[in-house]
Length: 306
Image (tube, rainbow, N blue to C red; front, side, top):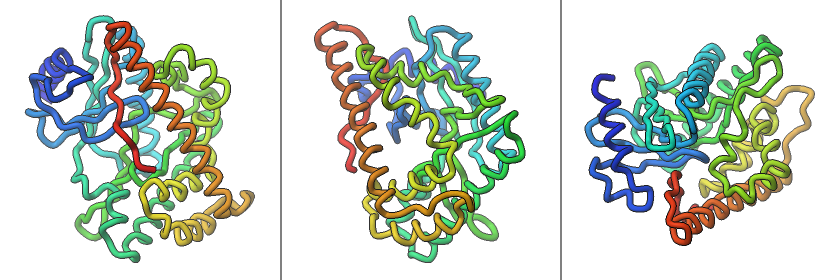
């Protein structure tokens, strides 16, 4: 997009991660990922940008970007509808920051918002479409393995559901972390995920949590459990029985049926992992900024209701 790179470079140069409102170029912080912050930036209409300050060199950022584009191609081949996207590598002193731009959707169209605003029959229709899309990904993996295998995070916040001509358009938006395997080998460098964690805790996270977080989205049963368990975080546990029933209908025949007990246990463990990770990052931010007077490159969310 013409002129976007210069706007992003100016935004990055003036960005104060401690006081976002002080940035010369105004932006709305619209969301967070595990290793990113999502902005709508003044002067770039119709787009949001995921800011990922992970890279020590341009070559490292370009390698990640190559994986991102391949991941998007693979997801499209698997039948998912993706938003328009465009990407920019912006230098910032010792770092190279990747901005992944996506077509912007109304916040009300995100599926985790839709479940609070639409009738139950439309919510179940939306769920059926999500499950159909997830099944399409698994069918793709069966065709392409071991050459290629893709993973997706099926949580409601990663889908957009909006009216279109002839029905509804379902789009998948969580593409910024390219999770796929080539000939059985993971392409995402796990050290990039760990880079946002405090140095002293990286060995602990690597030992006890990383393997589970990296692999769960390849396993169909875990993807469905994650989708259902996320209803606790979205404050709609009343929907769990209906979601659970539909998820079990579509599990591969060899998989054990998902129980409410399994969903509850998974959610407790997942909640602990991410609360631990976020608490450690907040301590790391405080140490770097308050005690050491050093910059902290990541933008962290405030309190999260779970």
